[in-house]
Amino acid sequence: MRPPVRAALEPTSALVEQVEDGLGALERDHRAHLDETIRASFGDSLDLDEAMRPFFPNENRWDYLLGYTPAGRVVALEPHSAHEDQVSVVIAKKKAAQEQLRGHLKKSASVAEWFWVASGKVQFAKTEKAIRRLDEHGILFVSRILLAKHLAHLGRGNANRMTARR
View 1 (tube, rainbow, N blue to C red):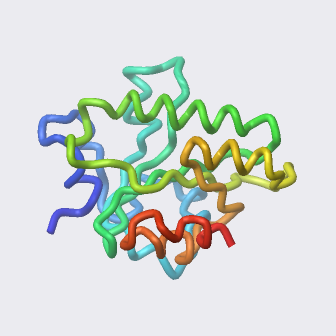
View 2: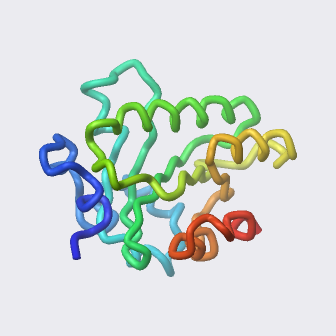
């Protein structure tokens, strides 16, 4: 079975050759945003920000695509400052990534979950309004570290997405 990111990409996509095994595409500091117990669960990764920079140098770009092997799914990870004024920025990054990935992802492929992890101190209240806006745009804020509980629902569809927040 091919690792999830490689399997999701069109064979002719310029992104294929930029996919790395395991978490190889993540900056060393960004690996700390993944709980140690789940790091080996990622079969491949893509630094989407760097891969898209030549084509979209002045646009928002999402940071990473990760292949979560146990579910055979692709998830997106955005280490980004967690300030109240950044909610709109993260939403814009996701929208831009979806457009930028058109033609690169197979028609049958999709990003199963979009995770935002705080790259520093969380400096906004997890207000109902902010969480509702993120939910409306399909983004799950998981504070500073992505945990196994945030991924548990991926093999079961999105039925248990709300419990992943806790």
